[in-house]
Every structure is written in structure tokens, then in C-alpha cells.
Length: 493
Image (cartoon, rainbow, N blue to C red; front, side, top):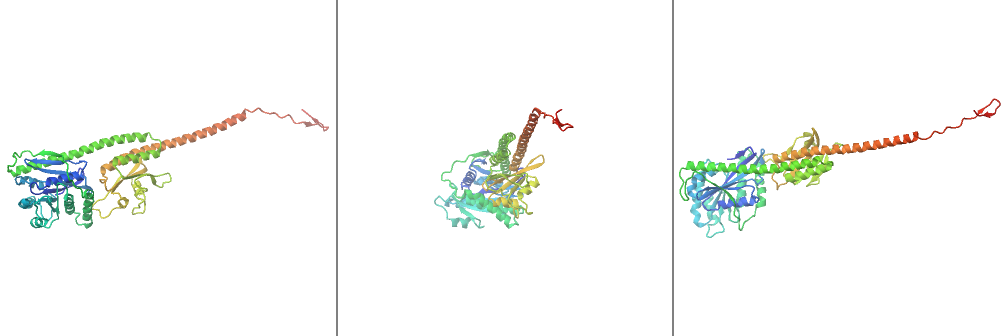
């Protein structure tokens, strides 16, 4: 049953590893966890039940895309193999969206495989799961031992439904990821049908292709000497049984298991929230330092370069640019990183105008992430994907209701899609930079005005000095002109 996590906008898909005791289920999960999450960003939980245990973890490292704004995530579980833990197996199996049956290839385990498979069908029916619609993938594990059954023998005994089957060696990881990718593809297609997306073959194909892309970097990874996995142990309370003792009171055991699974799920959420809070503290400190740096900057170009540098560092971007609106009104890139031309500036929307210009006019922060159920990408997302990126965001730089520029950010296929938290952070950075940019321009204009005023004052002072110098020159009086008398002689005075 698909679970919706509205708080984190996630759709959680549950895959359960089932099979006989000591068949390799735990080793499979440990290998998947170790390979896909080498930095241990998520914990592998161990729910202990006397002599056996249930493992599970949230596989958050895979980018499986989004449906209707919700990110798709996988939860992987194992069930205890011992027959006395049937109530636990039935509880863990509840709500499964996909199943991997891990069979033991050893000849001595032929009957154990058959009993476990029959138990799987029985517990699926008890949980209302239809074996015809819930995807099941088979693993024929321990192919490195001897004597073992042939693949053909195991197919005839276990695979009446003609499910996908993989020979595996869990201890080295051989075939484990291939089986996991197969169940992932089939499960995503099944989930798409439950969410009403299955009627679109294109959407289902995109989902399956997304699973293949997500798993591709890990394929072929084998561990000849696998390191010990550090599990977080949680002991089932209230079972009151010793090792080897058959469980009774199935309902009570089921409730105990459900309670502990729920408690561990809460712990997982708290771990995620804790990491988010730690990141936000670091981000707020960086924003504070960034704000101080741009507020003291008097060069507008340096403010924009500081913005790009900080956005790349905090958002872990592979591409970014700042687009500004010069005096002439023609938008252009002021700073770029990761490409020569901003994809959003040089792509046209349905009206023929630049996508970046439309975003500037819209004045709203926008996130561009491919949605699995979209029939086709818009002009902006098409430009983003055409430039080799997987997701992008654009944030107008505004100050006092005036748009001064546009910050664009791009993440590649190796990065988890940019999300709403990234958009919020980019908005704060853009807003802070916009104020610093406007202040730097005002300061530059003030300097230019001051220099112009000084030049005018100097020019006027020169004119006054010249006038003053002329006024101080001595007056030269010309002698009176001679007058002519009546007799015709010139006289003076």
C-alpha cells in the first residue's frame, strides 16, 4: 500500500525481502544499503525478535522522480526466516508494494524454499495482497556454494508465475542490485497504476527509465570482503519469548512488531529532521556572513559574483547565472558558471519571448523539476534538460518592488532534484544580493555624482578666480583728445 508523507511531500514505496532462514535476505539489504548510501546518510535498522531480526531502511539516495509534486522513495524490509516468527513475517509484509523472494540454492534447502514460498502466498492472502498484481522477483542465492540446485531445477520448483529470476551471491553482491532494479521497475509501474498514472504508457516508461538511471552508477559493484554494517538495533518489547521458543498470541506479537516499526519510523524521521536542522543552522550562518559581505561591497559586479559563489556552495549546483536588466532594458547574463549561455535566457516560450524575460515579468520564484506524470515538459524544463541538467530554479532579484535581476540555478543528473527547500534558500540569497546590488549601484551613482559635482565646483571656482583676477587689474586713463579753436589751431583743455 502506497504511503503518502505530506509533511516531506514523499510517496513511500515498500519492498519486502522474503525467504527461508539464513537464505541471504539480511546480506542483500546490507549490500544495497552499503553500495547506494556509502556516506551513511540513512540508518539501517535492526528490529530484533529473540533469535532472528527484521532489517529495514529508507533508501533516500535514489532519485526516482516525482508524481504530482511528491518525491518517490523506497523503503526496504526483510522478514525473519524462522517458522516460529510467522506473525512477525505477516506484520512486516502488510502493505508491501513489491516483494523479492530470496531462495537458498543449496540442495539441502529445497524443502525450506518450498515451505517459505507457500508461507509467502498464505501471508499475502492474509494481508489482502494479490499475487497476480503485486510484483514478485526471485533470487536464487548462494550460487557460490556446493552442492547446489541448477537454475532450471529452481525455476521448475519455485517460479510457476514466470516471474523475473536472478542467480545471486549476496555475500559479494553479485546479481543483488540487478534483482533489486528489476523489482523496483515493476513496483514503480504498479504504483503508477494505483496513483492513476498507469493509463499513460509514457509515464510508466519514464518511471521505469528513472529507476534504471538511478541504479546505473551502482551496477557491477561487488564486495569480495564486505565490511561489517553498523545496524541500529531495536528490540521488540512484550514478546516474552526465549530463543527457539515458538511464538503464541499472534495478535499481540503483531501489535508489538507494528508498534516498534512505527517507533523506528519516527526515529528515522527525527534523524532526517535533525540533519535538516543542522543544515539550516549552517545555512543561516552562511547567509548572515553573505549579507555582511554584500552590504559592505561598493562594486555591483562583485556583489553578483559573491551571489553566484555562495549559491553554488550552499545549493551544490553544477550551473548558475545572474541575469540583469541594464539601462537599455535588454536582459543579459552578468555572471555565469557551468555553461557559456544561460539555457533559460536563450530559450523561447510559447509566445516567442525569452523564458527568462517571462520569469522576470512574473516576479515569482519558480522550480523546474520533471514530473513523471507530465505529458510533456514545458519550454523552461525542456531548455533545462536540453542543456544536460535535470532540475533548475529561477528567483527574481527584487528590492523595493523593483526587479533588478534573475538568479538561475541548475542541478545535473547526479544531484538529487532541486526542491522547495533549495528554492527558499535561493530566494533568501537573491533577496539579500538584490539589496546589496542596489546599494552598490546607489553608492556608485553617488560617487559619480560627487565626482561630477566636484568637477563643476572646480570649473566654477576657476571662472570666479579668472573674474577676480580681471577685476584687480589697474585702470589705464587715456589723455583727453585735443580740441580745434575757431582759428583752426588745436588746443588742449
